[in-house]
Amino acid sequence: MDDVTLARLAKLAVEFGANVQPGQIVSLSGAPGKEYLVRAIAEEAYKRGAKFVDVSWFDPWVKRARIEHAPDDTLEFVPEWYGERLLALGRERGAAITLSGPVAPGLLDDLDPVRSGRDRLPAVRESGEVVSRRELNWTILPCPTVPWAKLVHPDLEDEEALAKLEQQLMHVLRLDEEDPVAVWKRRADTLIDVAAKLTERGFDALHYTGPGTDLTVGLLPGATWMAARFETADGITHMPNLPTEEVFTSPDPARVDGHVTSSKPLVLVDGTVVRDLAVRFENGRAVQLDSSTAQETMRTIIKRDEGAARLGEVALVDREGRIGALDTVFYDTLIDENAASHLALGRAFPFLAPDEEVAGRMNESDIHIDFMIGRPDLTVTGVTSAGEQVPVLVEGAWQL
Image 1 (cartoon, rainbow, N blue to C red):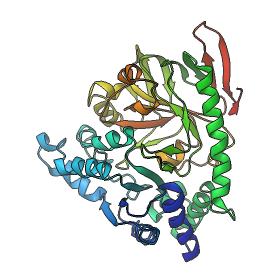
Image 2: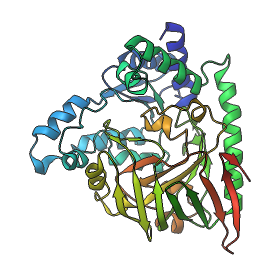
Image 3: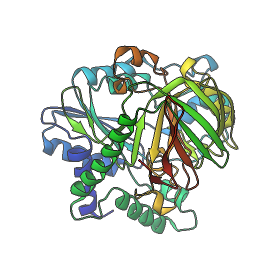
């Protein structure tokens, strides 16, 4: 990546994505191989007036050593200061920037999948708490690396693969535009308009049909649909995902029935790849989960707590976004979930509830794991409280 593109990417992350404010503490999360972008973002944050940039690292090789050798009864242990750091950042009304993209694909594949599923780091439960309370202005964006590029484009040599991945990521981030922020604002306006229409319709449920999928997901009364732009409790707007192409809400965790098949591989936060995921739900709960890889890891994860086997998010993605048109599996949930409609097991978003009663019905969990179900032949139908069937998304086009 040339210096000009790197500087534009860092500026997009700081000024538009997280919208860092002068005087804020900025949490910046990276991994081996991403140092170049971490440093560029840190410099940009200080130029913006950040009080302090706090860099944290996740090293998957250290995680591998833990899974391979640590005593069995310690695998779920997380030092309390991990959570306290996030809670303190929320109290300070800080900003957070996280870099996505695998750095060691397949590193954990030969380890005991049950032990792998018990160690959920780098995910930390408290991150969901500060997000739900809207205490942080934050963003997640991709950082290209050679290992990731070779995973996406295995037939190319290292430099060619990296160059192609970088070109694709700059395209989906709109950084190939003269004024990417203006282009992003237009796209965000479109998504926010769709979210408002879905909220106004107040559907009782969504019905998904397609290859390997026949699923009905109940919705909560008055729950809001959101897209693109968030606002903190203090009124700071930010873009949590760059890129973002989705509209989403939190469903009724007790009213999900049927079966669903993933349309893309799911990549967990530690780099584990889950392929061909298929889940069957009864009365809101995942009662059967199968996959061709990492099956026992996923089965272990959804037993983590009461809410881990229930849904916390439903998200719809149209065909007008830039990611799906590339017809590429990126093996990174941030990118792939914005290429296709998806669901998420685990934690819901209480800030979408109209009141405390509805918020209390939303799912609670330590986890939040998105998996992609969208494809060109997936049909999403809204079901009204009177039983009327209303087309919502057909062949990737909005019907509202």
